[in-house]
Image 1 (cartoon, rainbow, N blue to C red):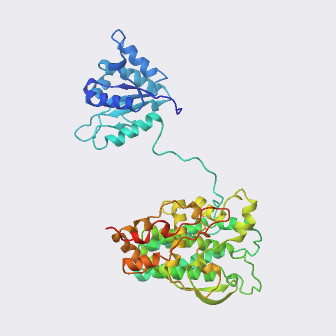
Image 2 (cartoon, rainbow, N blue to C red; image 1 turned 30 degrees about the vertical axis):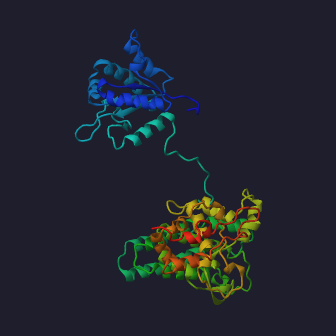
Length: 483
């Protein structure tokens, strides 16, 4: 329907439904619908049958509303009176024409068992039920949207085939099977055994994505894209962990420590390696960055702030070089990764060269997994990791800048609202934040939040807007100020 077109409807009804029909007609007119009704438009000298036939067949009439109560259904089924005449006309149109969407049954009455009174010839059609006062407004909106062709749920525009959607080159069934076993187990000892097997199997499958021959940024990017299915099994694993009795925080710390120390070391793939290029393990660093953001997305979704505290405040003992080397204490910022092959080698020659970040765009826009891992929630989890960093007394023996902060790669895709910080005005809600930050009262909470200040330099080159900090959402004095 054209935006400027006035929709036109004809209402077929019985006198017994006047109480619903007349208010409905008047309300539709008030909402810009041109309603044709015999009481308004049938002149005394006009033939009633000809009037009805013209209204039903008129191509200018967009919809025919059939108001159904017991009287109408009986007359329609028995072809009695004016309703019977209209039924003969309408049924011919319904059975003989392709455009059946023109006819909309409106339920005005139901029997004692709640079944609507509907003529047999339209019994199988989807209807609008205005017989129930509690549902009237929702059903009326559905009708109005139908008339204006503005559905509440609109089919999205057809996109293109995702680049990562290829036949798996590795067998992922063992991961699927272990996730199912974990969800079906109630024995703690067995749960722990399955968890260990899953992590072992997961790492072995990831190893198959290693390619010493990688020499271009596009190859790194395309390999990362192929890992989406295996990434999704880790997300299913997170969901299964909720049903176990394990210490989820401690377990996740161990998992990410092991991921990093195993998959970013060239010796894992070639124990005789005597050279190392940053591009060799870049895809694994990129995937670990993604998995960590996804894990935080998951924990925020379920408001599991106790586990979040353990994961974010933990001291991780990680290798200090691509050859392995010694394990040095550091913090979660090490899991943040900037892929030079993707951002500096591949992006400038790709169709997305004008983006601030190809990594962030790909994660948020091409690697969503509904309902939890959406563009908005992934971007907010990444921003969250930056915002809380200074609130923890984090350890690092490294003097590298990469361990001193978490740059939120996806901040340009985050919305303007961060519910954790806005709700801290409530003393009751602050209790959740005590758990997140490991404090006992409002004053200590204010103290740690005071460290989370806005940093003007925390932005992309060419971007005017920097990543927002916690204190952009709430003032220190407002924390815990209301019930």
